Image 1 (cartoon, rainbow, N blue to C red):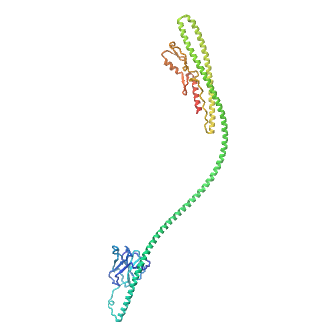
Image 2: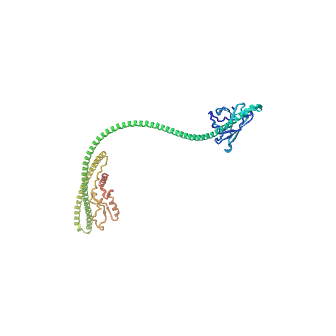
Image 3: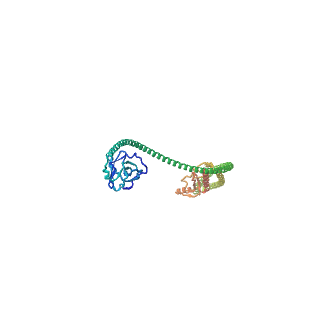
Length: 485
């Protein structure tokens, strides 16, 4: 076998003959002269659609598969479907067979299926003996008889061919239906294949999920084991905590008993503190009374001093006026001595007042110490009970007047009898006895003011010479603030 170009598409499957009528070969000679090009004529039926890889081959009669072709030519594509009926292919003489065997044309599509086959023919040179045959009359009659029989057989064959063509058309219709059914089956097969693929994917997913579930189950089992171990540890810890709780409960009961005892002691101390505060209030009242007495005494002293000044002035006048008034002057001197004796008595009383104030200060110091002791005990109770005990602040001692806290009183707060401005020529400081002449009233006021101390907590004033009393007063304010906090 020889080929003209690349090998055509063939098949090893033994083919049936029901496809052979889709391409009909025409003008096929019984003999073709060797060494001469051969033209193959054929018609395409409506049951075939030509494609680019269709081909026309020359096969030896008796072939079984399309691979047994001797030579072939590619089938040309028609220019349009309307002109697709009559086609022809030219075989070159060089590629044609050289023997005198019987051959036939076959139309093969690109799937390797035979769509049409021609009647057999030979490549043989016609001799003259075949052209000029001398026969006898009897042979002629036999030949005629044979021709008649052949004609009859030919007629029968034509009828058979017609019937076969009709059957072929019916078969073609059935083939079309079968092909449509095959396409439907192919579609169903594709759908089933896709469904099978989806089922396979679902199975794969289920397998993955199953494996992941197994892994998760294993992890859960491990976690369960760990949790059981942790549960055992927690139970042990719980037992230990219960034991510790029992110990702490017993200790708490003991602490509660101690706290109760401390509360009783605190109540006793509070009662003592209350008694001390009451005593302190009584001392403050006595102090105020003494200060009031001292203030009255100072007022009397001021009056006596003013009277002495007046009497001195009168004595001077009497000395200048008349010697008869010497007796009166002696009397006045005697009265002056009496007044000085009265002043000494007042000084002694003042000393007693000062001693009383010192006793008050000592009692105040004792109150401070007791307050500190009570504060320490209160802090100890606070640490046990974890809360603050608010102690009621001691009230400020009552004051009978604006300047009741003054030890010696404020000689300028009350209204004292002053001598007549016309009769008094000089001013004397009531505290240090410093004398100021007329015209120095402003210096006199500044000088007196320097002897006075003002309380920053209240409006009371104190003598600068008695700074200890002032400090005690400020300290009492500090104690009140501490008790309030």
